[in-house]
Image (cartoon, rainbow, N blue to C red; front, side, top):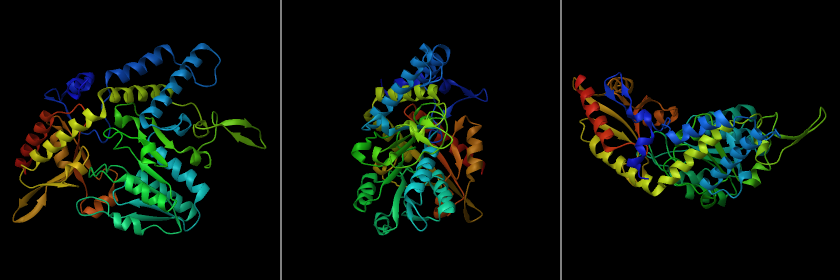
Length: 414
């Protein structure tokens, strides 16, 4: 199946907005649309297999458990993890990062110890470490970025010292589209015997991930950003680390024995999965990963690279257009953040991102506006927010043309 043929699997793309304009959905970095195959698999399970997993001896529970654990194996294959023991189901990237910050921090970090982040991080990879900072007095060290939105790798190397305990960095910026050199990031950290957590929320839908080849210690991603359901995500962790850190939450499922005097914990990965899991969402996630795999990342990358290059070319035809992030497409993922500057009585000014987004919406064009949960990055760029168009495998050049025409129409209003 090709990306062009895949579009028919997403019924929402046939919608008319305000009963007038065909939907042009360019907010994929926030969440992707879901193909029929994902929704139908989840519906089928709710109608025919619904029962709590792992605990029941009856037929439905056994069948639901088999589906849930088969989904874990699908994730393992997708990431090329060594074992399903290294695949922990969470509610998404945010919970995965919080789990590592809390549990790794509790086990291995003390007052004055340091975590290395970057200026382009999502709030989930900042605030979770700040909570640890407030509890335990750790320090946050920040890798700066260049003016064109790339990590200053020389500065990164200088941040390591005897108090560095972990590196936690995004694979792809959700604002700039910058593809970070994670292999070099991991190699340098490991030379200092420091583990690395990679935030893969924005990379997993677009780039093939092999956690063994990357040699990352932790990797997090969300189902809803890769054509799967909301409310489920994955934390991959090397078994040697998951064995050594304490559980994130207590409750059912994550225990072996409980008494009022003492509790022993379950084996991996169940030690980190307290309570009833979203076993139907895990099926949906597995179907989404199978769907992407059936198209193939070679085809997806080629399609999205062409689309991003075409969007760059067309957007730069607009007077006053300013695009943030790398201009080299090979270092740029399928995300474009921009502002449109217009002359205002002799002084330069930009159309406010909220105005642009609101007016494009009236034309049926869905983009993202604001700080994109990356306020420190906005401060670095000296702006309050941007407009962001982000692409998926089902987007087309016609979508880009509609965006450009919409921006031109809005610009004329100012």
